[in-house]
Length: 288
Image 1 (tube, rainbow, N blue to C red):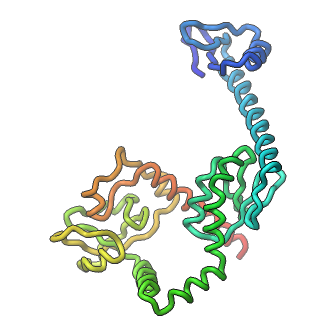
Image 2 (image 1 turned 60 degrees about the vertical axis):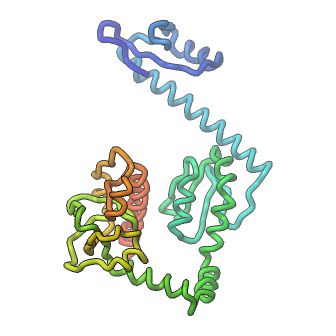
Image 3 (image 1 turned 120 degrees about the vertical axis):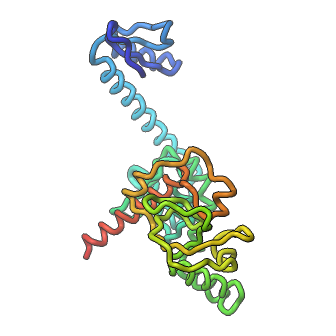
């Protein structure tokens, strides 16, 4: 939708090629006329843009309602039976154990939203087909995240080489340090992307990073390159929102140096995570 010139006050609307929609539009806007030059319907008047916007919003709402009905019918015909999924009054409801991997998979569902008050995910009925395609993976990960399953895996790994490596990685993460190539010092006033996610660097620890530790816990270092340890913390929601994305993906050289400017996709994921953390923190404060 776009406005006409000031000498011809009005607005245009591009409609789907569907006789019913056009008939409704002509009924709602009797003065509308087809503009060959614009390839769209033209409505005169200073309030035309607002009125067209409302009309199109009603069409979208009706389309969503119809799509929701189709989704509910599809579920009734081919239901998903799972302890992690319920049918709510206005959406499918997902309750699962917590896992970063699981959260990232659920967020891929079209139209999904987090309901902080009920602590569950809500998926609109219109997204049933997308939900059904992704559900086997989601349910498998959710089952693996159950406390009993986690305990069994810990018991199975106890005393093994893999188990010791897992514990070593956890100990290393708790140190809140990260290696950066001396040849490429990171900015200290903005969030950057790393092999462990988006972080804000706080300063040098004053120690050279051991290449074996870098290789084991972070990324393949470049032979002959010197690396130093930096202290870090996650970026806040405000810091992530004000961080401008890079114009292109990072090069291999940037990745080998340990940090790069975040892409838009990386920022979107980090912002969602930060928003969830902020809401959880506010909820805990109210409950305290």
